[in-house]
Length: 436
Image 1 (cartoon, rainbow, N blue to C red):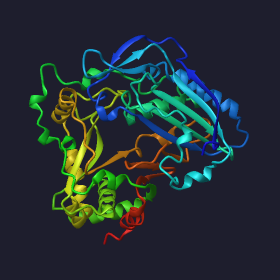
Image 2 (spheres, rainbow, N blue to C red; image 1 turned 180 degrees about the vertical axis):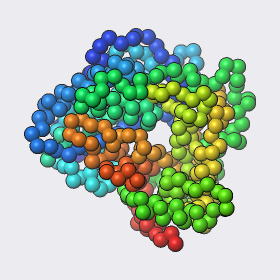
Image 3 (spheres, helix red, strand yellow; image 1 turned 90 degrees about the vertical axis):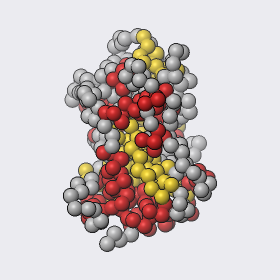
Image 4 (cartoon, helix red, strand yellow; image 1 turned 90 degrees about the horizontal axis):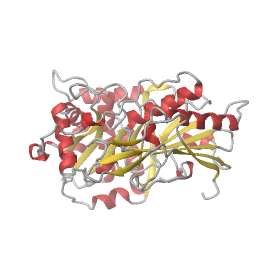
């Protein structure tokens, strides 16, 4: 692995024009303990005839520099605030990091299947930032030329500054600059982090943790973390429109008259959660939780402005015993997911901001499967001068489940998650089993 990727150049890229200097405060949601990490994306592109690698690399680097003008906090540095538990960004145009590299081993075909290990693609984003508050750059971009002329772009974005929607808006602005489509970002990036802070005068005494199971601990009946993290092996499976419709039909067959039909996300989330739980063989009484992000941009009143690129989500939490989740089927699980989504309104968001800012509430790991939906972010539209990416995924595949886009198939979803090697066959069997 050490010789599979060779770094040709690593440089600091600063905004191409002067940008404001000073300190910007991050919101209560931005400052949450569990968001203090780097989100790492991997986009892979097909080789094209007559492609000039040097020109492509220079164009991408220039586009990043231009994009850092309206998104100048991504050229700053995140740090802890001196006067409160929250975070802030010191903006002095310190810059992002751009890396160009070459691989003599990997080709486009390597990305048609799940990676062999959870860190198989680690070298495609050479700078691994373990601590996002240590003065490290919030943005790292690595362009790696593969052995067959294809290209892999690894991107690391500090989660404290952007959520998935905000990060994708930034990357699509870079894409527009590369292709010459649009010089001004659309939507225009908006900071306004104060909009997701607790109202003045309110404290966590009004926030009842019983209403927020995402922050509550559950009993560990099985050595949960050791069970779900041992000898992990990445898995990947695509659900097309036909298969998702089968899941919807199965869920509807157990619904009550008058219930609204389940969405694709609800049934697929429930099916993956249930299959994972069954494959893991948890004790029947083990409480399990599915945590997933819920965009609140239009759930708070008034809604957040277009272009707000901070963390504008809260965690939805579906909860069940292992026995009920396994025995009651996909309709039961999708109902739990739907109920978790429906409870999130403006008041719910206000309670969360109080909990995370005053009592430092953070999700526990026991009983939890975390799911993140990348399939609707627009990452599949990010171009670097080689067409749209054939593969969109994470740099490292771990026990957190991701829903990924499938090129040319908007109604299909690629599901990736790492499970213990001993459970892989069972997990695939449960995913594919008949729902009749």
